[in-house]
Image (cartoon, rainbow, N blue to C red):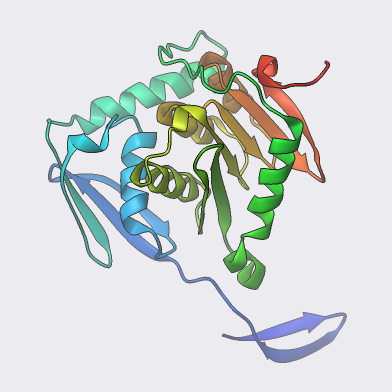
Length: 248
């Protein structure tokens, strides 16, 4: 793309790369679930991951049919879905997290009994190194899931929520055990971000960025280890300290 570069009083036209985003819609059982701006890659995985990270499904077997075109996806589940009720359940958790009240989170993420510092450092290094679209455009977030037995999966997108949906979807399609996996992200750890990992059953979540108080509260309620500011081979642990193999 042709852009005008202005620098210290000087200006000139240059060619620059700009990431292309598109509007994408997801329908479930003929109901509109979400419209979101995305980067056009891993669309099937995005849809599947979104269903898991919003607590709509617990197994791929619950999907009867999934069809995708350039601008939308249509999902038929084997059971009925009350979208309003599903959203209310998530909003109740986030509301209680924002007001400091007890969070009604019954699912506990008990996997990964011990976490090595070197493991966190190495997968954060990989997250930073694999962001090719970000390197050329500066316009994407990224996420990576690590499983000791299966390796890693990675995705980029214009939206930080989308990256989590994509890697969760990829992981399910590759038969990862998410209960024994680590999620890393470039995005801030808000309650809305952390609840996605919690619903997906992921016990450890790391970011190069800062946590929000709601994110920490959701992590505490789901027994998740939450790590922020994971940069330059150091990091802060905000919840789930017992997993970290270190003297504290």
